[in-house]
View (cartoon, rainbow, N blue to C red):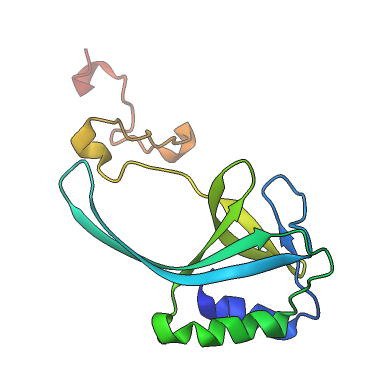
Length: 157
């Protein structure tokens, strides 16, 4: 989800709900402890150079069970973060700690923000010798170039 979408959803909500990948809710007394700009430059295993820019939002849980952030509070935090994010409409990455610090993409469904697990991947599969998945075709989709491909005169035997 991009920052513009996040702010749009915040503008229509009365309360904030974040849902973890296992379906559990992030406790309602969460804090947003930082909003950051992450710029990552890296070389993949094929030697290609990449640059990735993200807006990072860190969610933290403390023992202050009465704490609540409203959607307006979070929109204000995002507005303050323009000092470093400027007006770039960046993809959001959420940091949230369960067993370890996880990094999640974000979706919006049924008036809730859903944490989506992120996965690693090889960006240079052809250079690494990783076979590409073969495209499956229905036999009916394959057109024969010859009317009778098994006739004695077609050269198949």
